[in-house]
Amino acid sequence: MNRLSIAALAFSLVVSGAARADSVIILNSDEASYSIVSRSARTEVVRLPVGREPHHLILSPDGKEVLIGSTATNELLSLDIKTGERKRVVKDILDPYHLGFSPDGKWFVTAAYRLDHVDIYHADGFRLAGRIFIDGLPSHIAFDTESKTVFVTLQQSGRVAAFDLATQTLKWNMPVGNAPAGIVMLPDDKRLLVALTGEDRIVTVDPTDGAVKGSLQTGKGAHNFFPKGDGRHYFLSNRVEGMVSLIDTKDEPKVVANVRIPGGPDCMDITPDGRELWVTQRFLRRVAIVDIDTMKVVGSVPVGKSPHGVFMLKSTATVTAGAGIPVRAASTAGDRK
Image: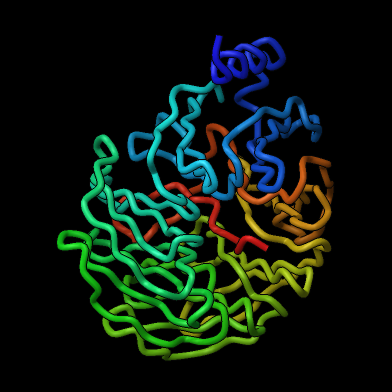
């Protein structure tokens, strides 16, 4: 019996079918494992092995599986969305740090942070369409509504690059500020928000040419976004500050609420009922639980070393990765530090 089969059997024995629907997946990036946490009990149920350096994960276009990218072993692990059980491993996906499916489901894109390239695959069968080498540590991904363009932050060079999906060519590469990380396309398809981890702010970027059109001070180490789900508000993790901000994007973006979360808040996800925000704490080996109505921390769960990506099994929270059809959030956060 191989490692995949053993782990699947262990999960099935430990976690009942009812419990799986109540589960949260947490990627422990520094110990090659992922934790299954019970939402209701707020406790880790089981910890299972995965390829080295798992950072981010994403829902497949058909909504049937969750894909975990393991950057050091160049592979994707597929988990069944309903049961959490392992389905398959996709090999030869080089350095899949951040992951994204285009809104139309035709393209799968990876940002190879360690190897300095952006890979564009045909989503059907993960066939490589083009590999674009670009200096600057490719970090996070967003799409336009028409699935024509993918936008990638470059943390080291302080730039954002736009690539044509059909031709796999560079459209523009523009400076935006120090250490850009999280990036999201707003529903109007006319504004990109970019978090500057090397500064204390986010910037608004024109997706047509990369020009910076506005700036908002938030907290130290502004890092990553997650949509509240109303098409208007976005959560922002400020890793150095130890704080998550709620951003209102109507007209000019503004901060409308903050909650203190120590230990390097990073990736986020929302419970299916929309009441809680779960936030990984990279430096504390924990995941914090925030009541969204009150914006107060109401719980915390110990997990593995350097928890990064987080995903609610059977969650209904979505992010419009460019708009068009909703695309499940890719647990968008974090550099490798």
